[in-house]
Length: 484
Image 1: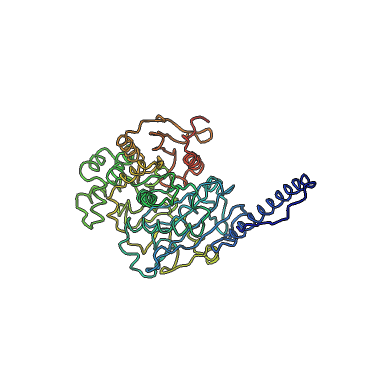
Image 2: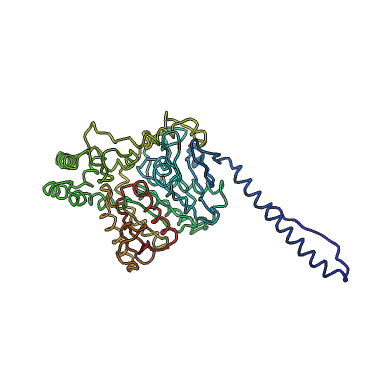
């Protein structure tokens, strides 16, 4: 903002007292004017931002601002990532910035994260319903559709959608944030948290690692912590804990459990599947597991009845061809999200466009992701973040059989032992209201594990109120509530 300089002739001595009072009065008045001018300019610049969303079709009145649009991450290949940004409901200038990434790989953080899980609205026919447990109550929420080929994100040529891998995705995500800060410079120095679920167990740690490396040369990112929900961190441990989950919940028999652990475990089956070399032995075992677990039980939330959202398919790559050929995931809820985001007036309001696809999809049909990246553990990367002083929260919906809590808990304990982190909060229940929200344990005040009672693979979707309590505690660096 411009500075003002006043040049005046010194007053005579007899008028010094009056002049002093008048000078103070003028200074105060000038300060008020400048403050008002500064605020007005900031509001004007903010509201005139090219990516400002005036209002989404059918949304209720809200007091916070929304933005969406594109950030080019590769000028030569014309790769552009689409984002949606909802500022905090109250006092956004004092709240942290939180990036949310959904998994897949290849599923939309806009459709799943923002409009089905922890964003401010949920589609309901022609209208949007306010989400009372939106995470933008506590933070400024940034949702990114990544990599290119997901949702509204696009590239000029189809070659950019071929053999995409973790390394390229992390690099593009880093460039996105650097250039996004050019659009929103007021957030550059803000406390930053990276969050996500499922395959974001790969996305988030690898992005955070690049940030730490860049900060070593020139501090750019004020990274404070990462939070990962039901994440893939170590392929074999995460996947093979599924057998115990199925058996302990009565979904498979004793004999099938023995086959699923000793003859062909799940990580072996998935490894063979993505190499197009499924053995007859593994095929037989998986067929038996599929028959007993039933197509009428959703693997992402074993307590739900069959009418469940296809947003739960964001991790369908973890269950390749284990269901009957004619089985499709129920779309009774998800249709609302898909229909809403495919409306022309909605796309215009979002400043979004369809490039190379005919319609917006929850999960990409054009992305060819290198699924062998699944086998590369990101647990060591998480360890390097802890070493760098970044807080880590691993949380698990306790009804998810895809990435069960047992595997995640084992991996958190492994990290704690590796870094000699003593227990600072013993394993105990935590509360949401007057109900048990789950269980938690904290190591060294830097590594936390929590379960969310009654939650599925997508915790904010199935337990929104509990997820908000979890999120608030994480941002504040406090243990989860011990009493109600």
